[in-house]
Image (cartoon, rainbow, N blue to C red; front, top):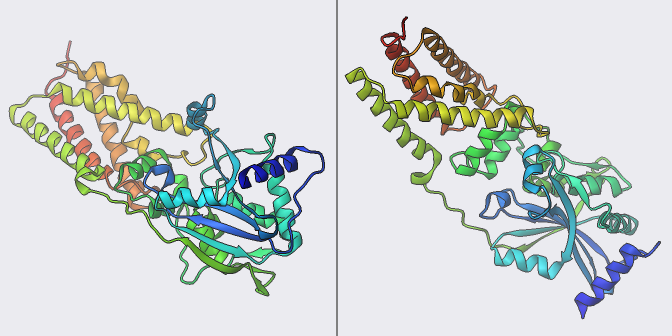
Length: 392
């Protein structure tokens, strides 16, 4: 009966003209922070807003992290950087049960808002939940389920909120912030580092750190109104103390896998050197894979609306034009211009190393064995090609 009552109450509020639920003086507003989960899309945690009013037996949770895999064009829009997210709501009992079952930590911060501010917030949420308002264009760094929480409270509070820096706060780059949630030497971390460009290697401002849910918690904890006269948070509660045990195994990590593959290719290159030969399938694989990866990197850079994929210097080792050289590497003899092209690839690898050492872009650690392997193979191909030119 409680669910039916709440649903009817909310529906009447959302869709009837000028109808709004008026909170009592006992209402409380909280920000909920959910710890990380096991899957990549849960690795960064989650934030939500809780509205509780014991007088009306109202206990609802609103969050901006809803998306529909089955929506038309979902994956195409995701690839193009036009992903649509939505605000949604649920009963608190269902919300907390979901994360208890998932063994994910849930922390609550009850906010020091006036009755007017609470009502303004709730009215805004009721407005946002309507079908014509619930969708928004998602941006991982600037418009996600965490930043929307910050923005809505900034807009509804009658006094300016000052987000003070936590004690011993050290500003990090956007990439370092991602790596704090997703280990670099993991397949998720490798994919993120491969897809996102050097633009995320800039240092985030203190407020920009709040694109991650745990920083929402940290900054809200010490936030104040108008020159530290009153704290934003008046009470903190642990609603679920369980935390997911996320295990990683080095033997299946990108660094280990690419290290083993790189060592194998280096041994094949040494064998080729000893016999003055060339293993064609190795070169076809190298040029095909680097060309394909490079093409994807360039498409993410130039053919999508993703802001974080720009200026991606992974394109220096994963060079898109390599895929066009497959017919050439299949030949037993090559033309002199192929040697020039190989020297150009070696130059690109050196340029990538320079970018890495000067912190223009921080590459994933698993790229190191790939870089070494490509350098050795290209150097050998230069030597082999000079003795196997296709001369008229």
